[in-house]
Image 1 (cartoon, rainbow, N blue to C red):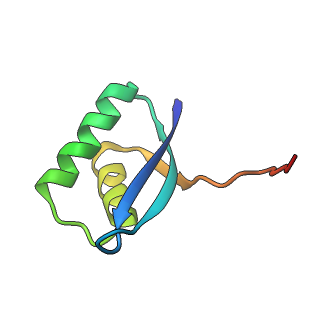
Image 2 (cartoon, one colour):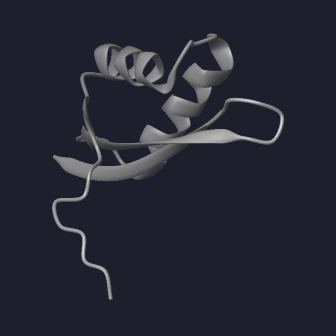
Length: 75
C-alpha cells in the first residue's frame, strides 16, 4: 500500500481559508488518487473535506488519516 500526504484548502471567507491535511492509504498510483478525488469534488457538493475523503475512501476502498506531525522542533 502507498501512503500519500495531501492537503485541501477550504475557503472560509472572501480572503481566508482553512488548511486540512490528510494521509491517504491506497494501492493506486498518486495520479489516479489525485484524479479521482478531484472528480468527486467536481461532481458532488461536500460540506467539508472530511466528507469528501469519507466518500472517496468508501467508494475506492482507500483509508485516510489526519496528518499530524509526530515531532515538532523549533530552531
